[in-house]
Amino acid sequence: MVSTLKAAAAGDQTQQDSPRLKLAVQKSGRLTDPSLDLLSRCGLKLSRGKDQLIGYGENLPLDVLFVRDDDIPDLVQEDVCDLGLVGLNVLTEKSLQLTARGFAPSFRQLRDLDFGRCRLALAAPDSFHYAGPSTLQGRRIATTYPQALQKYLRERGVVADIVTLSGAVEIAPRLGRADLICDLVSTGSTLAANHLRELDTVLESHAVLIQTPKPLVPEKAEWVRRLTLRIDGVQQVRESKYIMLHAPRSALPTIRQLLPGTEAPTILPLEGATDKVAVHAVCRENVFWETLENLKQAGASALLVLPVEKMLR
Ligand code: PRP
Ligand code: ZN
Image 1 (tube, rainbow, N blue to C red):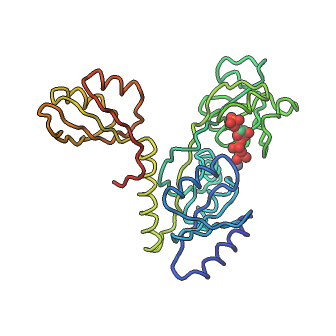
Image 2 (cartoon, rainbow, N blue to C red; image 1 turned 90 degrees about the horizontal axis):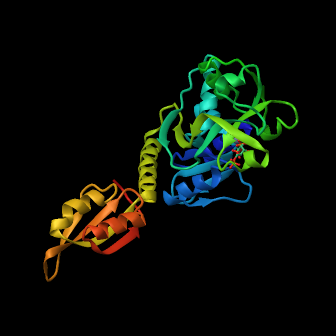
Image 3 (spheres, protein in one colour; image 1 turned 180 degrees about the vertical axis):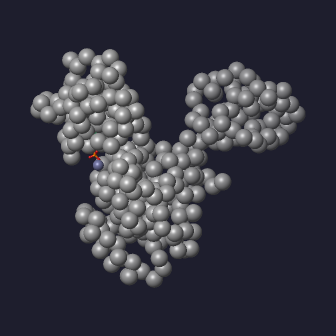
Protein backbone atom coordinates (compact mmCIF):
# COMPACT_ATOMS: atom_id res chain seq x y z
CA MET A 1 0.00 0.00 0.00
CA VAL A 2 2.69 2.46 1.04
CA SER A 3 4.76 1.64 -2.07
CA THR A 4 1.74 2.24 -4.38
CA LEU A 5 1.33 5.62 -2.74
CA LYS A 6 5.01 6.39 -3.12
CA ALA A 7 4.75 5.72 -6.85
CA ALA A 8 1.55 7.80 -7.17
CA ALA A 9 3.12 10.65 -5.19
CA ALA A 10 6.33 10.59 -7.23
CA GLY A 11 4.44 10.49 -10.55
CA ASP A 12 2.44 13.49 -9.51
CA GLN A 13 5.55 15.47 -8.56
CA THR A 14 7.06 15.28 -12.05
CA GLN A 15 3.87 16.62 -13.66
CA GLN A 16 3.92 19.85 -11.67
CA ASP A 17 6.12 22.88 -12.21
CA SER A 18 6.20 24.25 -8.67
CA PRO A 19 6.52 21.94 -5.68
CA ARG A 20 3.15 20.83 -4.32
CA LEU A 21 2.40 19.86 -0.75
CA LYS A 22 1.09 16.35 -0.20
CA LEU A 23 -1.29 15.91 2.67
CA ALA A 24 -2.48 12.47 3.84
CA VAL A 25 -6.10 12.21 4.98
CA GLN A 26 -8.10 9.20 6.19
CA LYS A 27 -9.80 7.54 3.22
CA SER A 28 -13.01 6.63 5.00
CA GLY A 29 -13.67 6.92 8.68
CA ARG A 30 -14.39 9.29 11.51
CA LEU A 31 -11.77 11.85 10.39
CA THR A 32 -12.60 11.97 6.66
CA ASP A 33 -15.49 14.44 6.57
CA PRO A 34 -14.19 16.84 9.25
CA SER A 35 -10.72 16.79 7.61
CA LEU A 36 -12.17 17.71 4.21
CA ASP A 37 -14.40 20.31 5.83
CA LEU A 38 -11.37 21.91 7.51
CA LEU A 39 -9.47 22.03 4.21
CA SER A 40 -12.46 23.51 2.44
CA ARG A 41 -12.79 26.20 5.13
CA CYS A 42 -9.09 26.92 4.59
CA GLY A 43 -10.00 27.76 1.00
CA LEU A 44 -8.94 24.54 -0.73
CA LYS A 45 -10.94 23.39 -3.75
CA LEU A 46 -10.27 19.73 -4.47
CA SER A 47 -10.97 17.94 -7.72
CA ARG A 48 -11.39 14.28 -7.00
CA GLY A 49 -12.78 11.50 -9.08
CA LYS A 50 -14.79 8.81 -7.39
CA ASP A 51 -12.63 6.36 -5.41
CA GLN A 52 -9.48 8.18 -6.47
CA LEU A 53 -6.40 7.93 -4.32
CA ILE A 54 -5.41 11.57 -4.84
CA GLY A 55 -7.45 14.77 -4.79
CA TYR A 56 -5.80 17.65 -6.64
CA GLY A 57 -5.91 21.13 -5.20
CA GLU A 58 -7.36 23.34 -7.95
CA ASN A 59 -6.53 26.67 -6.38
CA LEU A 60 -3.67 25.87 -3.96
CA PRO A 61 -0.42 23.91 -4.48
CA LEU A 62 -1.69 21.16 -2.18
CA ASP A 63 -2.84 17.65 -3.07
CA VAL A 64 -4.61 15.23 -0.77
CA LEU A 65 -3.79 11.52 -0.59
CA PHE A 66 -6.64 9.37 0.71
CA VAL A 67 -5.21 6.50 2.76
CA ARG A 68 -5.89 4.21 5.70
CA ASP A 69 -5.47 6.24 8.90
CA ASP A 70 -3.02 3.64 10.27
CA ASP A 71 -0.68 4.35 7.32
CA ILE A 72 -0.58 8.12 7.85
CA PRO A 73 2.23 8.30 10.47
CA ASP A 74 4.52 6.12 8.28
CA LEU A 75 3.75 8.10 5.12
CA VAL A 76 4.69 11.33 6.87
CA GLN A 77 7.65 9.96 8.80
CA GLU A 78 9.05 8.43 5.57
CA ASP A 79 8.52 11.75 3.76
CA VAL A 80 6.11 10.30 1.17
CA CYS A 81 3.69 12.99 2.36
CA ASP A 82 4.66 16.37 3.74
CA LEU A 83 1.66 16.58 6.04
CA GLY A 84 -0.95 14.32 7.59
CA LEU A 85 -4.24 14.68 9.42
CA VAL A 86 -4.44 11.82 11.87
CA GLY A 87 -5.87 10.84 15.24
CA LEU A 88 -3.64 11.14 18.28
CA ASN A 89 -4.65 7.51 19.01
CA VAL A 90 -2.99 6.26 15.81
CA LEU A 91 -0.03 8.59 16.23
CA THR A 92 0.61 7.54 19.83
CA GLU A 93 0.42 3.84 18.99
CA LYS A 94 2.87 4.32 16.10
CA SER A 95 5.27 6.38 18.25
CA LEU A 96 5.27 3.74 21.00
CA GLN A 97 5.81 1.03 18.39
CA LEU A 98 8.80 2.87 16.93
CA THR A 99 10.26 3.48 20.39
CA ALA A 100 9.84 -0.20 21.29
CA ARG A 101 11.84 -1.09 18.16
CA GLY A 102 14.58 1.33 19.11
CA PHE A 103 13.69 4.13 16.66
CA ALA A 104 12.86 7.69 17.59
CA PRO A 105 9.53 8.94 16.20
CA SER A 106 10.37 12.12 14.30
CA PHE A 107 7.16 13.54 12.80
CA ARG A 108 6.55 17.11 13.85
CA GLN A 109 3.22 17.70 15.53
CA LEU A 110 2.07 21.06 14.14
CA ARG A 111 -1.42 21.59 15.51
CA ASP A 112 -4.00 20.00 17.78
CA LEU A 113 -7.34 20.11 15.99
CA ASP A 114 -10.82 20.56 17.36
CA PHE A 115 -12.36 17.45 15.82
CA GLY A 116 -12.04 13.66 15.95
CA ARG A 117 -12.50 13.60 19.70
CA CYS A 118 -12.68 10.06 21.08
CA ARG A 119 -10.96 7.96 23.71
CA LEU A 120 -9.18 4.67 23.85
CA ALA A 121 -10.92 2.89 26.67
CA LEU A 122 -11.10 -0.42 28.47
CA ALA A 123 -14.50 -2.08 28.34
CA ALA A 124 -15.89 -5.36 29.58
CA PRO A 125 -19.10 -7.38 29.35
CA ASP A 126 -21.80 -6.01 31.66
CA SER A 127 -21.32 -8.98 34.02
CA PHE A 128 -17.59 -8.32 34.55
CA HIS A 129 -16.79 -7.22 38.09
CA TYR A 130 -14.36 -4.30 37.97
CA ALA A 131 -12.70 -2.78 41.04
CA GLY A 132 -9.79 -0.82 39.58
CA PRO A 133 -6.81 -1.70 37.34
CA SER A 134 -5.66 -4.59 39.57
CA THR A 135 -8.80 -6.47 38.43
CA LEU A 136 -7.10 -6.70 35.01
CA GLN A 137 -4.25 -8.85 36.33
CA GLY A 138 -3.91 -12.04 34.27
CA ARG A 139 -6.90 -11.22 32.04
CA ARG A 140 -7.00 -11.42 28.24
CA ILE A 141 -7.57 -7.99 26.68
CA ALA A 142 -8.31 -7.68 22.94
CA THR A 143 -7.16 -4.53 21.17
CA THR A 144 -5.80 -2.99 17.99
CA TYR A 145 -3.67 -0.68 20.19
CA PRO A 146 -1.26 -3.12 21.93
CA GLN A 147 1.46 -0.54 22.63
CA ALA A 148 -0.81 2.04 24.25
CA LEU A 149 -2.48 -0.69 26.31
CA GLN A 150 0.87 -2.17 27.34
CA LYS A 151 2.03 1.28 28.54
CA TYR A 152 -1.18 1.75 30.55
CA LEU A 153 -0.79 -1.67 32.20
CA ARG A 154 2.92 -1.23 32.86
CA GLU A 155 2.35 2.11 34.56
CA ARG A 156 -0.14 0.43 36.88
CA GLY A 157 2.00 -2.61 37.62
CA VAL A 158 -0.49 -4.96 35.97
CA VAL A 159 0.45 -7.98 33.86
CA ALA A 160 -2.26 -9.05 31.42
CA ASP A 161 -2.46 -11.05 28.21
CA ILE A 162 -2.79 -8.63 25.29
CA VAL A 163 -4.61 -10.17 22.32
CA THR A 164 -3.71 -8.06 19.27
CA LEU A 165 -6.46 -8.00 16.63
CA SER A 166 -6.76 -6.07 13.38
CA GLY A 167 -10.43 -5.16 13.81
CA ALA A 168 -13.86 -6.15 15.17
CA VAL A 169 -12.46 -5.96 18.68
CA GLU A 170 -15.90 -5.46 20.20
CA ILE A 171 -16.99 -9.02 19.45
CA ALA A 172 -13.86 -10.67 20.93
CA PRO A 173 -15.43 -11.30 24.39
CA ARG A 174 -18.50 -12.95 22.81
CA LEU A 175 -16.26 -15.17 20.68
CA GLY A 176 -14.36 -16.19 23.81
CA ARG A 177 -11.13 -14.68 22.50
CA ALA A 178 -10.78 -12.20 25.37
CA ASP A 179 -12.24 -11.22 28.75
CA LEU A 180 -12.14 -7.50 28.02
CA ILE A 181 -11.40 -5.09 25.21
CA CYS A 182 -9.44 -1.88 24.80
CA ASP A 183 -10.92 0.08 21.90
CA LEU A 184 -11.87 3.51 20.64
CA VAL A 185 -15.06 4.98 22.01
CA SER A 186 -16.71 7.99 20.48
CA THR A 187 -20.47 8.02 20.92
CA GLY A 188 -20.42 4.76 22.90
CA SER A 189 -22.98 3.13 20.62
CA THR A 190 -20.65 0.30 19.55
CA LEU A 191 -20.08 -0.64 23.20
CA ALA A 192 -23.80 -0.44 24.00
CA ALA A 193 -24.71 -2.57 20.98
CA ASN A 194 -22.29 -5.24 22.18
CA HIS A 195 -23.35 -5.10 25.85
CA LEU A 196 -19.96 -3.78 26.92
CA ARG A 197 -19.41 -1.35 29.79
CA GLU A 198 -16.66 1.27 29.74
CA LEU A 199 -14.22 0.87 32.65
CA ASP A 200 -11.34 3.31 32.29
CA THR A 201 -9.74 5.67 29.77
CA VAL A 202 -6.36 4.66 28.39
CA LEU A 203 -5.89 7.67 26.11
CA GLU A 204 -7.87 10.81 25.18
CA SER A 205 -7.66 11.52 21.47
CA HIS A 206 -8.38 14.17 18.86
CA ALA A 207 -7.12 14.90 15.35
CA VAL A 208 -3.65 16.39 14.89
CA LEU A 209 -1.75 17.88 11.97
CA ILE A 210 1.69 16.34 11.53
CA GLN A 211 4.61 17.27 9.30
CA THR A 212 7.53 15.33 7.85
CA PRO A 213 10.79 15.49 9.82
CA LYS A 214 12.64 16.43 6.60
CA PRO A 215 13.19 20.15 5.95
CA LEU A 216 10.78 21.51 3.34
CA VAL A 217 11.81 23.55 0.30
CA PRO A 218 11.02 27.25 0.91
CA GLU A 219 7.87 27.29 -1.31
CA LYS A 220 6.38 24.34 0.57
CA ALA A 221 7.41 25.74 3.96
CA GLU A 222 5.66 29.01 3.10
CA TRP A 223 2.45 27.15 2.20
CA VAL A 224 2.60 25.16 5.45
CA ARG A 225 2.90 28.47 7.30
CA ARG A 226 -0.10 29.90 5.45
CA LEU A 227 -2.14 26.73 5.90
CA THR A 228 -1.52 26.57 9.67
CA LEU A 229 -2.50 30.25 10.01
CA ARG A 230 -5.73 29.52 8.15
CA ILE A 231 -6.35 26.45 10.33
CA ASP A 232 -5.89 28.62 13.43
CA GLY A 233 -8.36 31.10 11.96
CA VAL A 234 -10.92 28.38 11.20
CA GLN A 235 -10.63 26.91 14.68
CA GLN A 236 -10.99 30.30 16.39
CA VAL A 237 -13.99 31.16 14.26
CA ARG A 238 -15.87 27.94 15.02
CA GLU A 239 -16.49 29.02 18.60
CA SER A 240 -16.44 32.77 18.01
CA LYS A 241 -19.41 35.11 17.86
CA TYR A 242 -19.68 38.82 17.10
CA ILE A 243 -21.85 40.53 19.66
CA MET A 244 -23.41 44.02 19.46
CA LEU A 245 -25.39 45.77 22.16
CA HIS A 246 -26.36 49.15 23.57
CA ALA A 247 -25.50 49.99 27.16
CA PRO A 248 -25.37 52.88 29.60
CA ARG A 249 -21.74 54.00 30.12
CA SER A 250 -22.08 53.28 33.85
CA ALA A 251 -22.79 49.59 33.10
CA LEU A 252 -19.68 49.08 30.95
CA PRO A 253 -17.42 47.56 33.64
CA THR A 254 -20.04 44.89 34.49
CA ILE A 255 -20.81 44.25 30.83
CA ARG A 256 -17.15 43.78 29.93
CA GLN A 257 -16.88 41.14 32.63
CA LEU A 258 -19.93 39.32 31.33
CA LEU A 259 -18.74 39.13 27.70
CA PRO A 260 -17.18 35.66 27.33
CA GLY A 261 -13.63 35.50 25.95
CA THR A 262 -13.29 39.05 24.65
CA GLU A 263 -10.17 41.21 24.66
CA ALA A 264 -10.92 44.88 23.89
CA PRO A 265 -14.50 45.65 22.83
CA THR A 266 -15.14 48.60 20.53
CA ILE A 267 -17.16 51.34 22.24
CA LEU A 268 -19.05 53.66 19.87
CA PRO A 269 -21.11 56.77 20.63
CA LEU A 270 -24.83 56.60 19.81
CA GLU A 271 -26.34 59.49 17.86
CA GLY A 272 -28.52 61.64 20.14
CA ALA A 273 -27.70 59.73 23.33
CA THR A 274 -25.18 61.12 25.82
CA ASP A 275 -25.19 58.37 28.36
CA LYS A 276 -25.64 55.33 26.07
CA VAL A 277 -22.99 53.70 23.87
CA ALA A 278 -22.86 50.80 21.43
CA VAL A 279 -20.54 47.92 22.31
CA HIS A 280 -19.15 45.61 19.60
CA ALA A 281 -16.99 42.64 20.56
CA VAL A 282 -15.71 39.32 19.26
CA CYS A 283 -16.37 36.60 21.82
CA ARG A 284 -14.04 33.62 21.48
CA GLU A 285 -16.61 31.37 23.10
CA ASN A 286 -20.15 30.53 22.29
CA VAL A 287 -22.67 33.06 23.57
CA PHE A 288 -25.49 31.31 25.38
CA TRP A 289 -28.96 32.62 26.22
CA GLU A 290 -27.92 32.85 29.88
CA THR A 291 -25.14 35.28 28.95
CA LEU A 292 -27.59 37.46 27.00
CA GLU A 293 -30.02 37.43 29.93
CA ASN A 294 -27.24 38.46 32.32
CA LEU A 295 -26.14 41.25 29.95
CA LYS A 296 -29.72 42.52 29.79
CA GLN A 297 -29.95 42.38 33.56
CA ALA A 298 -26.80 44.53 33.71
CA GLY A 299 -28.48 47.23 31.59
CA ALA A 300 -27.72 46.15 28.01
CA SER A 301 -30.37 46.44 25.29
CA ALA A 302 -30.65 45.80 21.54
CA LEU A 303 -28.51 42.68 21.81
CA LEU A 304 -27.41 41.04 18.59
CA VAL A 305 -25.20 37.94 18.19
CA LEU A 306 -23.71 37.11 14.77
CA PRO A 307 -21.61 34.20 13.53
CA VAL A 308 -18.04 35.02 12.48
CA GLU A 309 -17.17 33.93 8.94
CA LYS A 310 -13.38 34.34 8.83
CA MET A 311 -10.67 35.52 11.20
CA LEU A 312 -6.96 36.16 10.67
CA ARG A 313 -4.78 37.20 13.59
C1 PRP B 1 -13.86 2.69 16.27
C2 PRP B 1 -13.97 1.53 17.23
C3 PRP B 1 -15.44 1.24 17.29
C4 PRP B 1 -16.10 2.55 16.98
C5 PRP B 1 -16.57 3.24 18.22
O1 PRP B 1 -13.52 2.30 15.00
O2 PRP B 1 -13.20 0.44 16.81
O3 PRP B 1 -15.80 0.28 16.33
O4 PRP B 1 -15.11 3.37 16.32
O5 PRP B 1 -17.32 4.40 17.94
P1 PRP B 1 -18.68 4.70 18.71
O6 PRP B 1 -18.35 4.81 20.18
O7 PRP B 1 -19.14 6.02 18.16
O8 PRP B 1 -19.64 3.58 18.42
P2 PRP B 1 -13.14 3.33 13.79
O9 PRP B 1 -14.36 3.69 13.03
O10 PRP B 1 -12.34 4.47 14.33
O11 PRP B 1 -12.27 2.46 12.83
P3 PRP B 1 -10.70 2.20 12.77
O12 PRP B 1 -10.21 2.09 14.18
O13 PRP B 1 -10.57 0.95 11.97
O14 PRP B 1 -10.06 3.37 12.04
ZN1 ZN C 1 -7.84 2.68 11.42
